[in-house]
Image 1 (cartoon, rainbow, N blue to C red):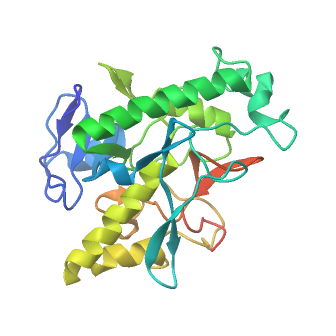
Image 2: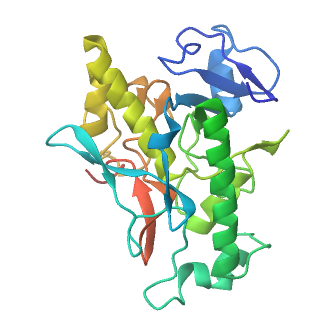
Length: 283
């Protein structure tokens, strides 16, 4: 248990197999006060990683994330090789000529990132953060993932709580910065999610779906989430985080639907990765 959090005592929130939920703060969370706590206190869910070697590898002597492609037709996943111009983490995005995005100082300053002015500095920061995450996963055999899509993104203090509508229309750099400040105390750090973490969460769902027939819907969610996501809203608007229990697997909401979610991974020389199949105005 991370310091400054309590394990949920509410029904359905206190086993790893169904999603072990922790709440920030010191007051116990029970069935009696759960509804209030869900909307007012940051929440995270434990994702087990039994074999961290399937999450990390090396490239040119440096630790990097193992990334996976999930194939809907075969309902299986395969590893994606490191690509110097494509999917890779940790790394920077500077455009085909090396002068864009992470190479532009104003992208940092406009998002309130004061300690970084160039791509080399940012790459060092990403590599350091990735190494810290890797060390933690290898020690504890898992990590905590935000229970909801990141909210309050137009403010200086983002949250992961139920019922927040402030979840869109910010730059990648703003999301990056505010994600670091959701939790940054008692030696505990939060961040925008790494692709390797997202993929391990899906692999957890896939594995549970294969283990028991009654969990088959969890594997199905990985490859076809059409019944479990907020897509093509009739009013063409986003909805609040955690709007329906149907959109949750293992107590983690909206990994599919509502809004796309930024990743720390690069997907090309010109873009960071996006995840979350379908959004409020698209399927």
